[in-house]
Length: 125
Image 1 (cartoon, helix red, strand yellow):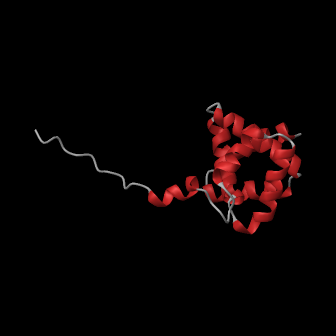
Image 2 (image 1 turned 180 degrees about the horizontal axis):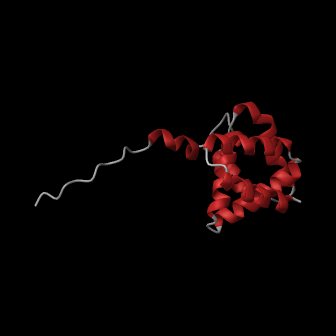
Image 3 (image 1 turned 30 degrees about the vertical axis):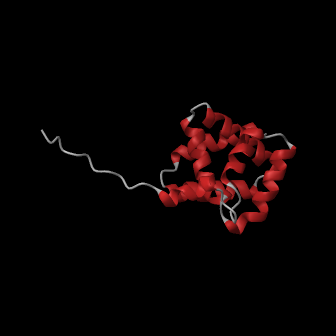
């Protein structure tokens, strides 16, 4: 079932062009899904992303707003525990790398210290 959930998301998401709609679609799907199925689906997607599957990466990116929203903190923590119990190690590792919505790790905060993009220099010669 979870493989089916991940596959359904991978089939459905590319047809949605707007990133806000993608995030809303995934939020609706994640919150409605059984936690076991959601944890396994996210694990399958994390595995695909590790294997350079661009659609799996896009689905995970669309899920991030929900997974990092403090309003869903309790649900995300329960999902993390489910992932641990079901041995969904790939997604659990991604999840742990991001910290919790209320206590982000430096990996999440790194975006605050982005280096400004440099303009290309003209050749001085």
